[in-house]
Length: 469
Image (cartoon, rainbow, N blue to C red):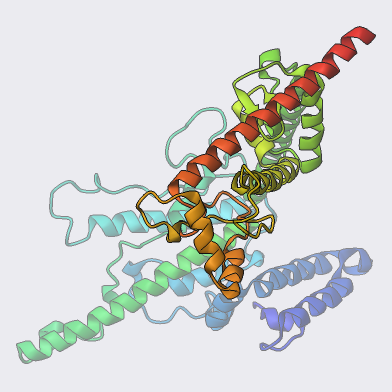
């Protein structure tokens, strides 16, 4: 008589996973063979049943299956029911094999694990082959030649997978579990029909009978397939060959991972050694910061000071503002964006505008120092082109007209005489075209004079340095 798994662990059917785990530990301590020296045989069998109960109830999938077929599993062979003997084994007949009490040890003895399940699955395979031969759809005269025989369970020496050489389909434990875990029966399950079609009074009733009979067959077939598939999973979980294969696979993966890690470490060390022994070629030594203009302002000024010491010979890349030569266009462009160049450029512009005003003041003074003209010269005198009559009037006429204007007008003129700090063109209402040409000529002369003065100073420094040497 089989015992319910819940009764073995002394828990309710609604017990949680944690409660089942605690109950298993409590029962294992009670029935462990080492603590029952006076009844070792009984304690060993009871302890095996307790382990089986915990394995089934701790797995949610197996527990669900057990709960749905609990009565049939406990009933076993005690109640087969009324069924056609030609149907072979049914789902109820297989329920008793969902228990470790069906075999004695994992060996090849008559009651051993391998022998019991090898005989069971061999019988199921024979029934499937016979059902295929007797199938109404098998009318091509080929007999069972189109049927693929289901793999055998094998024995304790059967390899789980191909190691040395391929022995063919069905020679490995993997083939067995692959086929039976996806089992689909060839049986017709006609013995589950509820109606005899010959009793139908008309074709409408006959169709209704056929529909109900088909539904009953499909239900029975599905239950039979599910039972065999779950039995294969139940056995696979307890098969020592499967456990040994999993351990070998885990060991192989760890070794492969260790080899891969060692390979990566070795390659890393080789790259580090190559990097340490690498010597940069002379032609590849380029100051990228200088090439791309990434110097800081302080670095730019230091570089300019170095260039100003006479280390750079005269070239096409010349800065008029700073009076310096540069090796390349990149150096000149980097220099022009520096703060030092901007300061010097601002000072030069300011000085040039002051010189321009002085030059214009000197140009507007009368050559004969005639005091009758009475022209007021404030230091920023401006020639008014608007008063030019266009008839070639003399310069004195223009001055006279300017003197006749009211003081308010003079203030307005003085406001217009404000110098332009930049490169903007002068107001056309203030200066004439002739005056513009004179200004340009004066600026060019002043710039040339300034450059000549700078060159003389630099040459003088170089001469002095040569004498010292």
